[in-house]
Image 1 (tube, helix red, strand yellow):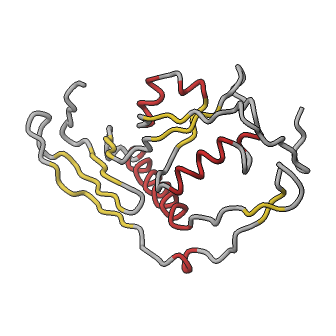
Image 2 (cartoon, one colour; image 1 turned 135 degrees about the vertical axis):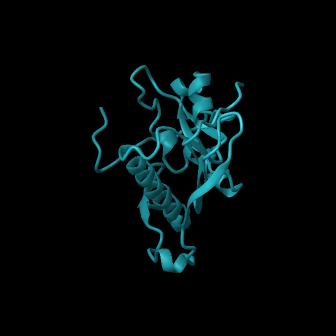
Length: 191
């Protein structure tokens, strides 16, 4: 890997879902001097202050009756909103010519769950994505283990550069040969 050069005036943004530190190089590329330009923090609220909806129910594609839908992760949603607001601020700085280049340092989502797709990048088994399906179950297992997994199409899973760009270092290939629930929906027409 080539050495990272941070030129004078360029920004380094170190962030996660709750805090961002914006640094500016006031030195040179060979002797950087990073000065704090801005600090953004997400207000930490209790879960009951972020949302109060009860988990929903949906029709079970594997049979009659209803299935529980997972509780909304209000903290994850707040982190996504924090990061979206940060991106808007950084975009505005670029548009206003305050900075030409921004280097982002953030934790990657290292685990990718592969969704097998056809030549049109359409999932080959929609039932595998539904509750009870192997892709859904792989995601559920990752969540239970505290892992924030990303979904990857089989096309991207075969592209090392695409995986590296997303920070994905490990892939899970759910077994689609097992009993996969039949996908059905009252709201979607499936050809």
